Length: 442
Image 1 (spheres, one colour):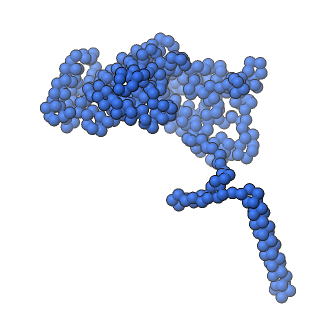
Image 2 (cartoon, one colour; image 1 turned 120 degrees about the vertical axis):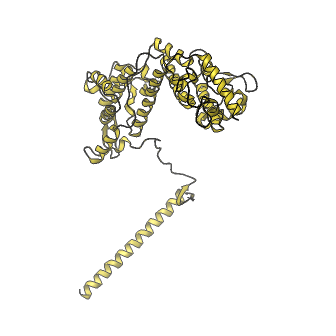
Image 3 (cartoon, helix red, strand yellow; image 1 turned 180 degrees about the vertical axis):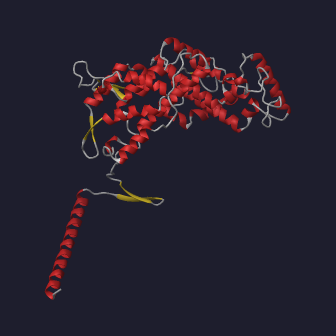
């Protein structure tokens, strides 16, 4: 390479360096001018290995995120891509137990458990739809009768009902019309600024049920589902048809639910007298009763919670049945617990703890009752009172091996095939308590 060429390259390099220096200077001056015009107060903080700065005068606020949502519709993978196929597999693969047909007789505990499973699976379905951002079409929209492209509004806000919460108050034609509305008229903007429809949400949510509904039940529901035109089909319509078959919703069934729940006997109907499971059962049925009644002024039947309170007095643990011995302390602890802060207060009773409290008959007081029972049960389990009263010394009953208090058979009283003689159960239970006391139990 000649000396002339070297000199030329050096000149170019020097010119580039000068230009870069001038550019840096210009940028610095612009920043200085901007800082004068828009003064900031950047403060740096450190948490562990994380270091971050905040402008305390004019902080930048990050866009909000949806808790529980792992995949947003705005960032769907490309059509036909490996990522999209994996996402569809994740949505449709079995993630929880199947929806199963509920028998028409709701007057026994076993059918109450079936109803519980329906409630649990409905919540699991909602959780899954939220995780994959499929919930939007489950907000049921009501198109105008005069113009199907215009949704009904109330005080300027689009009228809608959440399918998971209000499925008993929605008709099949309303859900079908809403699916059609989402499919024909609603779009959203993708992360690449493209216009996206809700076709995938409707199809993928429908596909989810193929592996989450018992085979014969799926076939029955799907046969009806296929009668609707494709523009009305989608996961919300299938779910509505499914729930119509699964959930009791008439007045006769409501009365049976109330009677069965309020006369539930824990010591004879609950396996191992597990209060946590009892609470799951009773709270689920209570939610069902509230939905069926559809009464905002009086959501619960008259004196319903007072009757449920008596249900919690049917255990084998006398201290639990009369837990008012430590009521004031536990009441305060429960009312202030984290589980109830979302209710916005701790007033669940009429009266005061120092006088005669009357449990209010509303959903908020029901939530308190479930938590109060949990707190009491856990305390008695931890200090040994519960196991001492309900079962055994060193793993065996007072008969030496497990014996039924009702028939003396080799099983628990909850599993007894004979009619329950409550007097005999009580006598045997009393004899057991004497045995525990003589052996130093409490």
